[in-house]
Image (cartoon, rainbow, N blue to C red; front, side, top):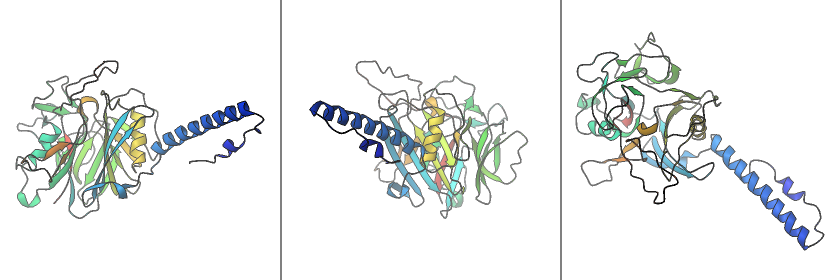
Length: 330
């Protein structure tokens, strides 16, 4: 437990059967309250032991958690040792006919982005082509609304850099930056931010975890995507929290920060969420040529689950997003 249970021992002497029952009921209520408090506190502390998580590849581990309190949530998280030899973080490249501020990338689903690295769709020399194992959606895009699955040119909300090439300028939002020397950082970027030493960058809406603390954020519940870095900037945490469905009702932005912290992050960004929230894995154990599979259950078509509906049926759908972050090795 997270603090002493001495309070359970301070029960007045048992004088009769009725008192005995009443005192033990009181003790049980206190115990349950303490347990719930500790469960909530545990979810907010950096105490997840990644040694017991599933290894997708050396340096990359995956965990899936389900909660019932304070509501149903399904959390998918990936922990990346960025110092593992050959590890690489990549993002969506420029689209054909790139025009800054108008047509910067081609919208595609997270699995389509993942498939591109395994089908030679991405313009990268074979000697430099990373084996992307995990992909997650990144920044918001415009115009919106747009057809959910349509692959079309789009404009990104904040800084994006792919293989050292500018895709979209900073706009005052926080960015995950991978420098050419391999160092990582999370910082706010602007149109004038120097990217001469940046290899890869993706951006999100706002910080949801700042030096281990949770900033005040609005409480709306939605599917969430988060990216975070450990205090020493060695470990990357990427996670999704499903929402708008029976098994997972979504999370607030502050809860996203809590979960990033629970999994070991010290600073974290709230990325594009809602129907964009998607995490996918290239599963080499699958017999099919297409080995991409979803690790979460996105609501890409904007579906809003009615929790009062009798049947509770839910069908997951994907969305074509503006850009993604890919995690892989060479």
